[in-house]
Image (cartoon, rainbow, N blue to C red; front, side):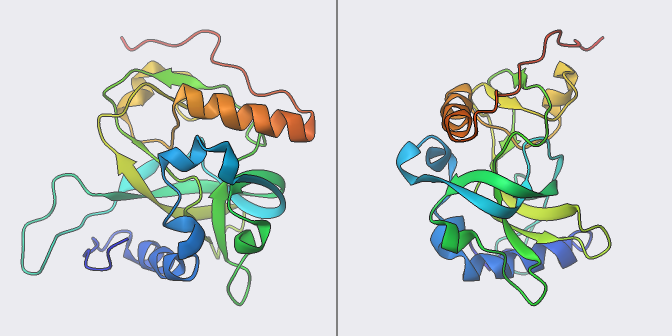
Length: 210
């Protein structure tokens, strides 16, 4: 992750704090890309506090390469608003690397579980999504059930699923955390085998835009 990026004022406080955490957790965070979510060899079940971003709405973080300079039209990262959970979760790397850090344990990683209990909306190929899985987050001081995570953006994605959007396909034009069907098939299979819990269903009736 490049520290040459210059962030917009709106989300600077959270974004900078999360980027600092990335230096501490680089063994997990910088290696966690879309291939990690689809690589069963690196996925481990752990128990503890984590951020769950699979329905997270995200806002691109303004950046520029060099100063002075024009803003980048397609920022590389977004700030995503995730929920904080505590319990069994699936993520990349050993459990020791996923222990909360900081004076108050405010720095955590984004991993995966069924805690959201929301159906999966399938979005068509060509849309944009974020990949928060394995990336660093900071717990909101005023709302300890909310975490702010810095996540890379994938533009022009393959078909993907998200638990955001309330089963409204019009929401696919917004920016949510998402994963490919193959990735969800793998992580759901592993999580169900480990916990005995059934995976959330796909949206039964997708609400189409008018």
